[in-house]
Image (cartoon, rainbow, N blue to C red; front, side, top):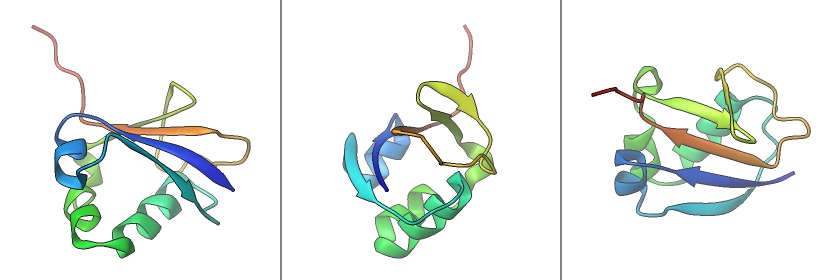
Length: 83
C-alpha cells in the first residue's frame, strides 16, 4: 500500500523531510515504524523512542498498535504542550 507520511517538529528535523510517499507492507503503525527505522540512520534516530511521539492516522490520533488498512495519511509528531 502507498501512504503519505508526514513528519513534524523535531521528527522532521531529524529525518530531513516534511513528508514523503512510502510504499509499505506494514499492517500496523508499529510495523511501519520498524520498516522506516531500517531505511537509514536518520530514521532510526527519529524513531528511537516512540514513547516521545504521537501518531495520527488520516488526521485522527491513534496508537502505534493501530492497523493501517484503509489509511491514506500517517503523521508523526511530538506530544502537544499547552502554555
